[in-house]
Length: 349
Image 1 (cartoon, helix red, strand yellow):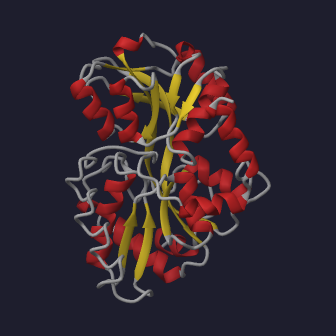
Image 2: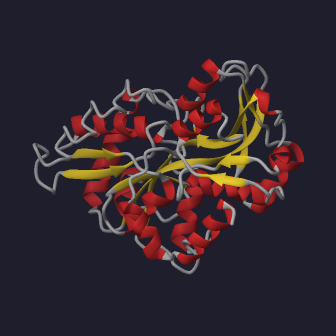
């Protein structure tokens, strides 16, 4: 049985309990459905800002449970994790709360964490949020809506990047038939998007591997896989590092292929990776994108959500990641689920 078939059987066997169980799985890779500066740990992705527990997440000095909040991000090779640590710095400095940022497998896993209350806030994709809240879209959510899932704010486009090495002679999605493809961490938004795109374009004969961005980059460099899907705001740190040591290709999802993908999945939007984003890629590359967002659950108190939301959006000048996209004015663009009352109190004020 191919790993593609194994994944489908796994998801078919899980309902909401299976999604919630993902909250207990610590992802070290991925997704995020994410990627950018800081994947080398320089911004705190090595835990130096307290994400290893030095902020009290190990119970040493973090204060009581009423002021310590858990924030689930994504893998250390993506954008979710370094961005979450910048948000942690802002919230810690401007409120009485302390954020404990945790690396995870990202979107689908993070929904499980919000559903069972093991996370107070998380970064997820807007399409995954819609699937989860409405009990649709992917097998793990069908007929099992996550009714306590609430939105806080949308942040930035998450670009679908299909990367390979130039030596692999893969120039279009059609060339992926028979290939070994890393579709992202199991249970991540990256994996969901990759399978959606491959299914839409009729690519069914492939061997699926599941790992986060940093490991996927290593797999490509070592020749263990032929291509990898990465979902995150460009530039993705893991792809930057790969491009600095190898000749890479970004496979376009454009033209009729892009229209077919959008026809099957309305949450995808047109996107372009500008030439020069990665070493050796001089021309613009057409693709599609989803949207990153902050989510919470209905049980988090209104005042807590309002305070955290205000701290973030009143201090956007302290962010260095995705600053061209994250604004108060666009914070509800693409919001795919019901807004938490605490977030609504801030944005409607």
